Length: 447
Image 1 (cartoon, one colour):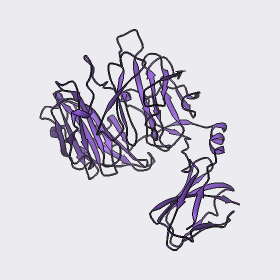
Image 2: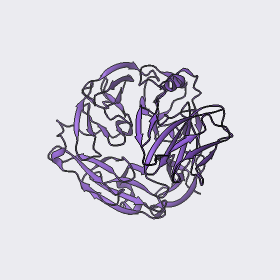
Image 3: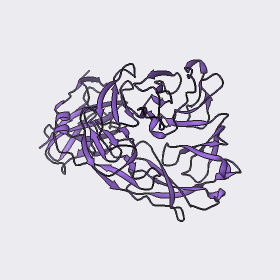
Image 4: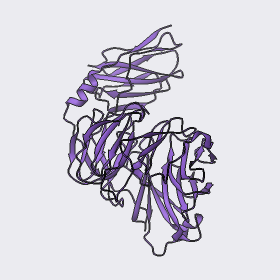
């Protein structure tokens, strides 16, 4: 059996850090449904998916057509519009409900979380792009946040009950149904502690979700919501706007390593980093993005941290050093990848901007040995000219090609295990091949 060796070129990281990165914010104008131009809200999904929701601005509300939607599947380049969310699904009184969360699962599926009378929660889901909505969950407590780890697994974190434990509800079928998590796996709150209700105080990754609290602690799950623990931070309080002392501000967790995370001081923008899941925190200095409205996000599948405030900056070395992007205020950055990193110009989500120039990681991160039952498997010739050929007993399922800077160049399928690379520039590339149930990564050179 042939062993395929995947070699890592650590020089790639050096190249990316050494080159002059041309990062800039591009204004994005989603196609707004006719008559719906106000109060945009957005949710980012996987694979460059964006859902945006708009109001018609009517006073009083048009309860049967409360909000409408635009959806992009290519990072905001093109949009389609359809569907309405009727407010009377939530409550007959449109003045006693509060929006608490928005999740995009696919081009057809999304979820909305609402608080009703400030005492209970309702979850609604669409499976047809927003044309129709069904209630899939109702909980007897105020909802703090909703987060999905993937298209199937998600959680809703709600206000603590009389036992002083957060109520957490979990889904494993994309939000079609919800079950309460066993309280035995959730630590108790202390004093009047509760979750901070601003979006920047929640952060999630593949399996982990971090929830900042008013006591300066962070509640964490690392198993998609089944069990929870808490960690202390350098701050004795969270989001204490009326206090002269600094307090816990924005939170960001790494998408690949759930023990790697970042927090900002609410009033100072002081950055702390943990590499052990919050057991210890190392101060790295302020992000220097102005004097207020500090926020931070980790761009998945990349080396980038983005910090915002009255100016925006980026780091490619886990927050050790920072470089300016621009001097224009931005708020609440969010990201699901290099082609899907967005922020707004105002805290009311009035203007929408996409960060351009980001690069993702190549798939090769370690020196790995992959075994395949296809003993004849290989790619050739190396170096290659017009075509790259894949020697295999069967057709490959899919391929993806990156350049040496981690930029996506081409992906697709092939009818004869040959790939046209004639248009590629000279240089080194990585190809990820889904073959016979396995993922194989190889390097090739275009001459």
